[in-house]
Image 1: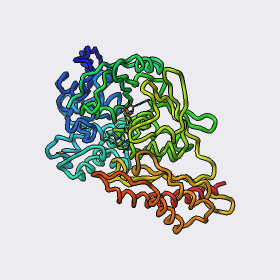
Image 2: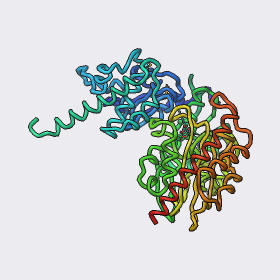
Image 3: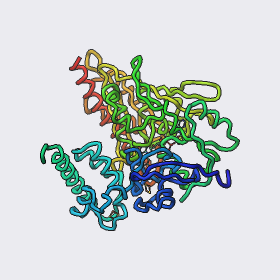
Image 4: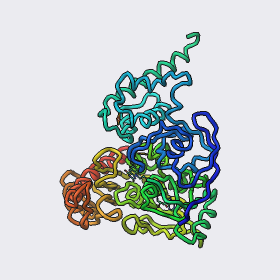
Length: 172
Length: 295
Ligand SMILES: Cc1cc2nc3c(=O)[nH]c(=O)nc-3n(C[C@H](O)[C@H](O)[C@H](O)COP(=O)(O)OP(=O)(O)OC[C@H]3O[C@@H](n4cnc5c(N)ncnc54)[C@H](O)[C@@H]3O)c2cc1C
Ligand code: FES
Ligand code: FES
């Protein structure tokens, strides 16, 4: 086994910002985001794919960043939980829905849920109950019991739908 | 929890991947979607010298239909299979098996080839492949060969792949007209690995009797298991709840001692095997009857 493997140069975009960095091949994407880019919103719970706390979007799809190497993200566009709110701090409708519906208690799982739900609502603006449960089943929460998160997804879908139809109405 | 150091290459062709594997002095590991390998690396249960990432081999990501078969590239994600209209319409059993694998977030990266090569005894894809009599295409230093699904799975987490071989494609026949199918499992939570499950295909002959019954159980043995006695008990018989029950009993009696672990005891898995056969047959016969009605 190599003592250390030579670091690689990677280029990627995270939340719209271009980065170039040297990483060891064994560095997971989660550790690179947290340690290399100081984006500590991405949480690390289990580090073996079970809890979903580390979810980020890679080229639009929600993935476990603990199950990806940073070198595999070379050339990719990423979004982490830090990319959800607007630059003036205004929360994303999914985040607002979490606040209103009490979708979080300790908040450890929340970044992962927000990313997974973001992907779901981007690809399916009015998902069935079954589709929502399929996605939430891949995220673990030890506090809420999930029902408030389920309500937050429905509420976020309605908010996003209303925003879409408002912007689609001429003169509105 | 961090992987031990390894060298890393990301070839863009299968040939380069094969030569990286065969040129490695120590242990080399292919990385596909990482949904099984990365946990093993993070926990240092796997400590390869070299990781050969197939993620940039774009030519292994496709779903095509030709000559009555679907050909699927090894690096096609399960999410692509799940979303494929071609798969849903031409081989619905494959679609049904796919949506039972883990969660969407795992299916986004987990690949078709990775699930075959991982050969987890409780996984859906190996059972699907045996049920559909899939053919697996493999490329190695000596060229290409093909392996039948039934010969591919050797034992727990072990396949017929040689160390420098890359699985490139899996081919499954499209659903035959008039044929019924089912894919059923019991897991503690939706998305978890199954405690036991079954893939079933069956047709009904002109007189309405069961024919060509094929039953493949998973989660109950080191590889997908075919309870041939149960299959024989069904063929030539008139379908009905009694027959399904009898086949289920037979299946649960004829299988070898299943695995016993924290998820389920051997005894419970044996019981579940019978239940899965009964439910699977009922569903598959109902579909076969509907298909006959359509014809
Ligand atoms: C939380 C969680 C839940 C899961 N639940 C399920 C479940 O319910 N059912 C289920 O079936 N699976 C489940 N999985 C496993 C998942 O489906 C994996 O995606 C799959 O087992 C491996 O596919 P991969 O592409 O990720 O392969 P990798 O993890 O990248 O590789 C797995 C193995 O296959 C080898 N390999 C990969 N591709 C090739 C190839 N083309 N040729 C030769 N060798 C190759 C690798 O060297 C490695 O040994 C789960 C995983 C997680 C993290
Ligand atoms: S930390 Fe990645 S899934 Fe738990
Ligand atoms: S809010 Fe605490 S784990 Fe989900």
